[in-house]
Image (tube, rainbow, N blue to C red):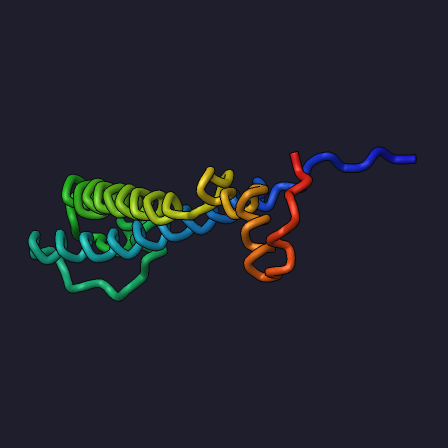
Length: 143
């Protein structure tokens, strides 16, 4: 005969953490691609080396040299890699700090003394006597 379970199963598994991590990485990649396109176009406009490129976050993320072929290598590195990387890291850090602050407000955990007070003998007896006045002349038999 199997032994009975002594503890309740966890409500938060490692799968939740992996799902949050996946969403975070996906969001960071989307933000980096969009910011790389925006800052790459800004660098291209500042260098006056070609027209404004069409929106293609994937090309800006993976092949910025194909999106802005006339832009110099230093301007391309700064405009499509370094600046969007710093902006994405700042955005991700801010989102993580806000998320941990929001998650820290949850009221889970062990009960405090004030939470357990209504369940103690004196309070239960007083409530029972309040609800049923015929118990007033009886003595409490609990310990």
